[in-house]
Amino acid sequence: MIGKQKHTNQASMFNGLAEQLDQKHPLYRLSHKINWRLFDDSFSVHYSDKMGAPSKPIRLMVSLLMLKHIRNLSDENLVEQWSENVYYQYFGGEQIYRPSVPCSSTELVGFRKRIGVAGMELILKESIAVNRDDNDEHFGETISIDTTVQEKNITYPTDDKLYKKIISKCVSIAQKEGIVLTQTYAKELKKLSFQQRFKKRKNGYKIARKANKRVKTIAGRILRDLERKLSPEAVIACSSNLLLFKKTLAQKRGDKAKTYSLHEPDVKCYAKGKEHKKFEFGSKVSIAVCQATGVIIGALSFTETLHDSKTIPAVLEQVKELIDDTPKEVFADRGYVGKASHGDTKIYTPKPNPAITIEQRKKHSKRAAVEPIIGHLKKDYRLGTNFLKGIIGDEINVLLAAAAMNFKRVINLWKKEANKCWKLIYNFIVSNYWNFIAQKLKSTF
Image 1 (cartoon, one colour):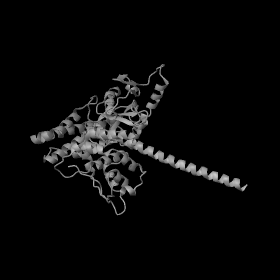
Image 2 (tube, one colour):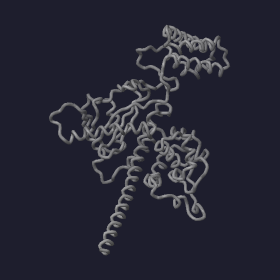
Image 3 (cartoon, one colour):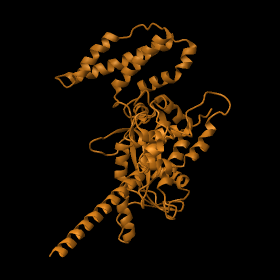
Image 4 (cartoon, helix red, strand yellow):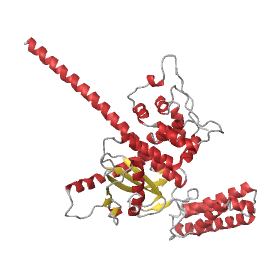
């Protein structure tokens, strides 16, 4: 059942929270700029009208998702800071100060799953609407696109790490089912770890390589022993894990669909040609930016290792849904070579062209602006390391990061306006002061 926002006619003896805050504060202004009714109407279908305990208000939960990425906070830190920050509370629809936490951090996980990817696209669409000028008829006609890797929160994968995790998980499954394994090899694994640690010593590489083979052998033995002793019901319950363990043990160096993490089996390996980081593990992300304004109008995650040019149809389809229009020109880097058009949209990549116009040359130069935008998304808006689980977590994280950067763009514009006002006031005061001094001097002499 949907929980309703608690409103009171008299928040305090004298005035409410709105009258106590600075009305020029960016979060205060942003709270009046966003169409909160849109989220209430769209997300109410995910709740029951008759049964169940009242949920948290939809506006509160949506505001928490926005603040999480705008301020680059974890779920735990966000709910703690919410109780300490009155602007966070007003942004979430509160009329009086509440010293308690708004919800538990796990409720944010449930809400993300509840509204899904479609709900996150609606938040991104609203962030575009906040930045969009109604009089701008050419919004989104020319866009820049680029791809990057959204890294998953996993350790750097090695075969030895995966084998040891298989062993520990098999032992924990056996303990949970009350099974006594023939041997756990705990003492031997400890000795093998020491042999693997000192592989850079004299003759240490051969010893470490032999130890790696032994660890793999032990992992296979424990897995087969567990399969023999599990009951038929337990085999069905653990079938997905057992198949994943078998696939990991059977994979070889040259295989394509390899497993790099047991708790995130959908992670892919990408080689982007970076000198400082040859391999990145996560999902490919495509970012589309409006050249005229710098607003992010497309953010899409791909789980497959696609060529950049093959991501264009899906990106253009998402952009059309978000801005209700199809871009006429797309400017990309040389990684998109191979596709000159898609439908009515022309795709331009840099190449030797003596007949290029000055306007096109400027648009190619503007394309480079997408690179720092991706850098800010990774560093400031939680795109650098994705902590959300699964493929859905990849899609949700990139959409929220893009929406947060769009909201922050509006906030930065308001800050610039405030600085300009103070400069104008300062210049007015200074000019009048010197005029006053000049008049005094004339009257004196």
